[in-house]
Length: 243
Image 1: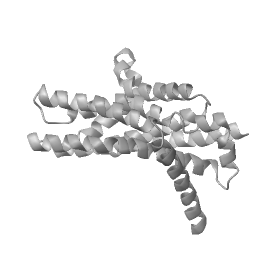
Image 2 (image 1 turned 60 degrees about the vertical axis):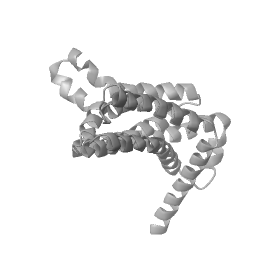
Image 3 (image 1 turned 90 degrees about the vertical axis):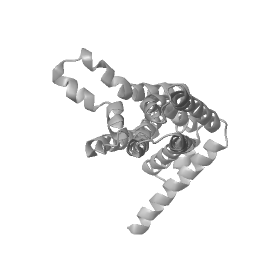
């Protein structure tokens, strides 16, 4: 039993490594990461130089909106490209299951997003040199980014699994992510009886709570549940397309 579980993990990691190698061998990784760093750099340094505040509050406040765009851009090809050129069917002729393939591809996208964050650690160093930042919200912010990235990565691979067109995949993932990000802005137009439920669906509110340094299990459970849900839906979608 243990050997079977070990083999399943190894197959998922093989697929993950294959995806990462493919990702970094092309230009998309560098274009997306470059654009992300340009935008976040402008946000951080405008706060730093123009407003004279050595903090990352503006950086974190923009993250749900930015990731709603950049994560779909990273994930749009993972399934749709292989289904378009027929290599996905070839992959399934190997001794792997849909679940192993989905987990491998999910981990690859998730790691790609986390790698994109590594250069932003320079902002912490800058804030520490020129100011006295509160490290609680900074640590909370990066913890929130990990969970938000996992959630949006699962949405991205789901969108990629239901179409062979990368553009449709991108916009499907973007619409779901941006809806979860912006949903709380429409609360004033909704009946008070459903405001609390709709508010709970907001990825921004849960991320903001964590980024304040408040680690609430309800916020973590929200991201874990959504991630598990979309991974499950991706497995189901691949099984349906296979049949």
